[in-house]
Length: 195
Image (cartoon, rainbow, N blue to C red):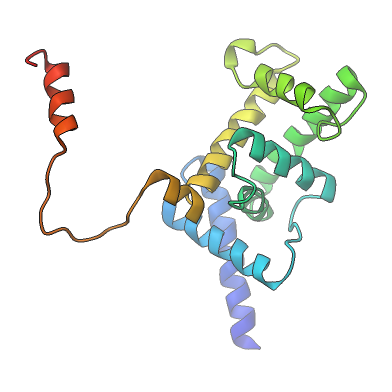
């Protein structure tokens, strides 16, 4: 029993530290991989139950991360963000506030929540808040929130096994010989003006 309590405290401390790092914009790959491991452990026990978000918020987050980076849902981005938000009040407030803003905006424009709107309506809102040049008093909270969504979705996806595979990262492996690809030489010469 003591080991289980100690493991839970360590896990909680890890999630809190990861949440704080994410809120500060400095979540490292190693910390991200620990969060993915915690998500995998929770998913292996049963269907994932959000630790922080209410069901509607989590459903919205799932759709939002998938529209931001295709494959993010399968890679566990919503769960990754949920676990980080459960460890950081600041990050949790950013996400719950942003999800609420999206629902209120869609309610005013289309009389529906964001997740209850058509994919065209959802995409139209994301197209507006994806660019700082579109920032108005009305859209400013959405622009700031969507910046967080993009960064956290990218962190979650590209530190997951699926994202690492997509990047083609092979890990730290020894090599008996290193050769610079011919394309790299040609590119460097072309850029230098000598080629």
